[in-house]
Length: 295
Image (cartoon, rainbow, N blue to C red; front, side, top):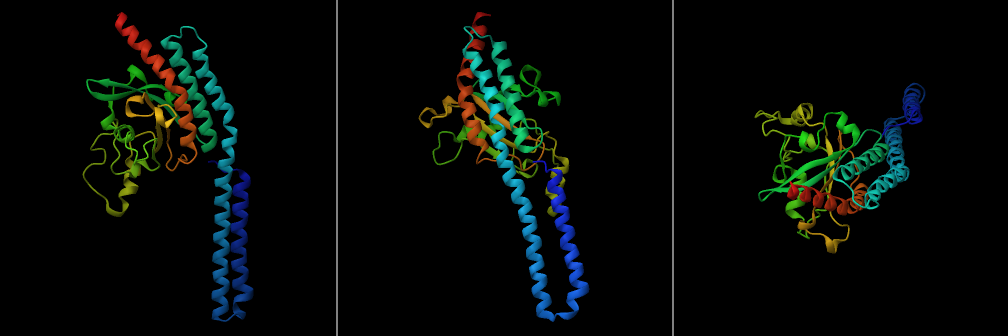
């Protein structure tokens, strides 16, 4: 989240004040203190600097939480786009995809507000190629599309579930009640050693390891446009209606920065949206199958 000018002013003034106090202490007071007094004052100085930094951290943390109150308008507009599909007597494939794209735009705006930078949003559509589950990117937000991130038939990569850690984790374990599989979250993708992605070649890092600086090198060489991600399955919200067969796709957030998203808050928001998506994806699937049978 972006800091304000006031945040930086307070931090700079605090640091200047701390150094001024240290210098003044060294010039005027330290000559009159014995070793024990010097150690005591030095210890108090370290504690003061720690609390200044910690206070600044808390301000940033809780200001971000307050920003969640600012996203309801965007989410409400997004749901309005979803509900407008139901108000159509015979919605077309194009209309449903258009409305889902508008939803992605609204969600991108909402989570960008929270995080202080652009957040990518996409909806993945689950189908099967033979017996292998595969996902296609149904829609993305406009910002992501402007960054050459493709959707639908424009994407030539086949995204089989077993080739993607996020989708595979949810899909393979979804019926296992002993594992939390209602979401996948990774805040440091470049240094996640076992992360798989169908756009990520197996030899992207090469065979050479760099010991203590390996994580630094991985971050420098990371080829994907995002570095943290949060994924939830498109399933009904009620647990009694959830099973692997009920998964219709995935709702995904990603950021070009590491350490983004809050699984404690964001997951609950996305689960509610996924429940709203569920029937729309079913309706779209029925239309696509119907068109295929008529051709």
